[in-house]
Image (cartoon, rainbow, N blue to C red; front, top):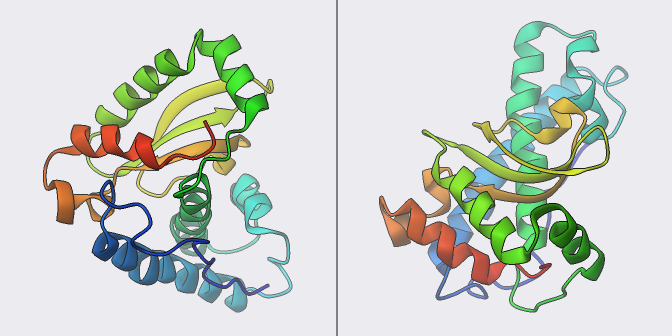
Length: 193
């Protein structure tokens, strides 16, 4: 199964002034393309063994019958692929609020504002590179946590709902070392809540 780089669904400059066009181009065309290509290399090398969707492969990674080095590459590259695919889809210039998600967030976190505050704190506390997540966990409940590098919630059998990339490539051209400012501005691009 070969994957293509997903389209953004909006122009590279559509998230300005919050995320600049140059960052979007590099992030999508270079970084996400690199994860896509690396994942495809593993899938092609083990065709016949790895015919499930990438989400299922990540969920069952440790039980796959491939060398550990290939599992590591699939975790890194496949994680980068699915993480970024979600990232592009939850952002955009046009709001399309998911009322059901908003209701679940309000039931779990008391309000959307308190959810954003808790999520932003989690994102800001990541040391180095990683992602902040809102997921549905094993019990079907909403949960906030972070992962290092390109580790995906699928590795834990969780469904990612909202993911924030806090690798420096996601913000450094515009915000330099001001990750907190990037996080605050990123919320203005999220279209589903």
